[in-house]
Every structure is written in C-alpha cells, then in structure tokens.
Length: 496
Image (tube, rainbow, N blue to C red; front, side, top):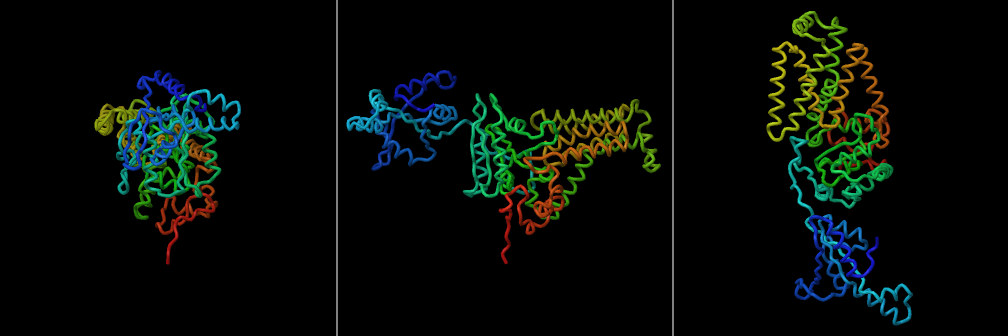
C-alpha cells in the first residue's frame, strides 16, 4: 500500500497499528537536521524542508527512503527507527503548478489537504542476539573457530568478511505471513549456475506458511525428495566453510533466528568432507577420509552382517571364533535379532538422553550410561559381550561421519538391513545394499546426481575425483567442482 495521505493521517494510522503490539504503545516523531557549519544535530519543533533532511539522511549510513505503509511497519518491527516528515517541498511544487495552470484535478485535490508525508528508515541496533561464539557442532583441529549466531544479518557479515568481492551477491526476502522471517540467498555471481539459482528462488516461492523458527522448516518445504531419509541440503554452522562452498559454485541459504546455513546442491561426497580437509596436508586428509568411508560402511552393515552370519552362515567363520560366539550366547534367552535390536535401541536411548540433558552432564550420561547398561546386560545374561562390542563399534563409526543429517540417515537404514538379514541372511543383506544403491542412484539434488562424483564424473573431466576419497595435493586442485558454471571453473593458476 503506497504511503499516501497527509502527515497527520499517516501518524494516526501508525499509532493505531502499533497500539496493538504489546511492546509498542506510541509512535514518537522527532524532527532534526544537521548544521553543516558546526557539524551538530539540532532538535527543532517546527517543520523542516524535506530537501534539507534528504541531504542529511543520504549522508548517513544504512538510511533508506520508504514509500509504502508495509515498508514502514516492517522496518519498525525489525528493530529500526523510522523518521516521518511533512514534505514541504512537494507541497510547494503542487502549489506552483496550480498557480501556473499546469495542475490537473488530482493535484488540486492534493493541494487542499495538509502537507504530504515521506518516511526514512534508519538502521537501529535491532533485536538482542547471541554474540559470535565457537562452532561447537563442527570441531576442527585447524582453522577458524567462529560460528554463526541467530541473526542472519550478522551471519551475512561473517561470510562477507571472508569473501571481500563484489561478486558475492546477497538477495533477501521475507517468508511467513505472520512471522515475516528474513531469508537470505548467497551466491557468487559468475560462478553459480543460473539454473540452480532460479530453481532455488522458485522453490522458496512454492509455499505459503504462517511462520517458522528455523532453517529446518525451509529445508523440508523445499526438499526435492520428501520420502528419502537422505538429506538434500548440506548444513553447517561455520562461516569459513560456507564461504568455501560459495567459491565452489554452491548456493547458501541463511534464515533469521537460525545459526544453521543450508548449502545446495550437494552429493554424497560433500557429506563426507570435514571443515578442515583443506587446511591439512593431503596425506593426512586422505587417510582420514579412508577411515570415514570404512566407518560409513560398518555403521550400516556391522549389525546386519553379524545377524546373517550367526543365523545362516556360521561356516564362513573359523572354528575357534564359532566356539567363542557359541559360548558367549549360551545363556541368552532370546534370538540374535532380538538381542541386537534391544541393545541398539538401548544405545539410541542413551545417545538421545545425552543430547537432551544440558551441559557436561549430557556427555557424562553418554559415556557412563553406555558402560553401565552394557556391563549390566552382560552380567544379567541379557546380552553377550560380542553384541556390546558390535553395537559400540557401530555407534563410534556413525560419530565419525562429519554431517549429522547424513549420519542419522545411515542409522535409520541400519535397521532396514537388520530385518532383511534376519529373514534372508547374506542374500537379504546384499539385496538391501543393492536397493539402497538403486535409491541413491535415482536421487538428485537440484539436478545433480546424489552419487557424485562417482556418477557422471566425466562431466567435469574427472577433476572431482581428485578431491573424493584421495585428496590430491592442493597444487593439483585447479578446478572447481561440477556445481560451478562450466566457463568459470578454474580457481587456481600457478605462476612459473
């Protein structure tokens, strides 16, 4: 709605609106201007020419002229100050046109009213927020310890601090009819693919919602595979990692009141990379990635393999190992599948309790609870020591995966493989692995295959394979991943 009408009418209108808010009872208006000779600000009671005010305001930072009622409301409710003025200059122009006979009927009607109204938004301190703190969810041995906070404006500055380029573009929008939550889209112009950027904007406008309090809601509403347990977005709380993703052609989404940034598009290889993989030497990173991929396999497969071997194929084990398993299960009153399932659920409960309990007590519950439950179950003949070892190894393997959402998806699939192994043995286990691979091969993240860079590696001339399991020395990582625009993938040039 345009900011039309007289000055007093607009002031009364805003007062009526803000009286409905619990924390705003009156709209105060103060007029001021800057004395250029003395460099001081004077407060005056009479109206000041709007031209003078405009010159003063445009000389200040974070000042924007507003021409709609909705803009004024949004500015005030976002913690900014709004300066309302009687536009004496506009009235003078109208009167001159009338005297010269150049005014139409609308101008004549305008002249009979009081002075028109204009508004300026002056950036304030905004809402109270948590100061910049350490990124606790993504610990690194080397690199910055700064983490995002709940203000997306602050998070934008943290990214801009690392990419001091005019090519870094930030587009803001408001989502949520009642919450009017700020959402920012960050990308590097010239590097990002236009089709990916357009698809992001399209998905953000495909829903209307009352409001949301975290970026997780945006992630679910724009997810291209709603029924898949595997995430379609990379999540991070680190500004340095977000900046690196932007330089590689990804798009980042920041949501106000959420410290978690959404990164897209992604593939499975992205989820297996840690924040400091590019800060360490290539040999160390390669060894750590090999460990992660082995851990990913065992976090899904170890319980199902144990069930299938003990129930259907014990002959593949050495005789001494078979006797150990038989002796360990001598007094267990229920089948192997029930034993593994009970212990897995018990460890999931301990993990969940450790997350929900605040402070250092949560970590203590995770360690002490696991030891107590495991030892007590063995002493009570409710579980064998082998099962405790397998469940503990499976839990540790899942913790080595850098991304929490991807690790959670593997934990869910683990139970699917356990059921197939209980019914069909090794055949069921292998069939389950094939079904998972078929599902992953059909997934796409904004048009890119989920199994990349193994799938369709030739699109980028196999350059992405240099930063997959084996990370080549940094001097050989000269090109951006396949997510970047084809004509601008060179990121490193060595000088002779």
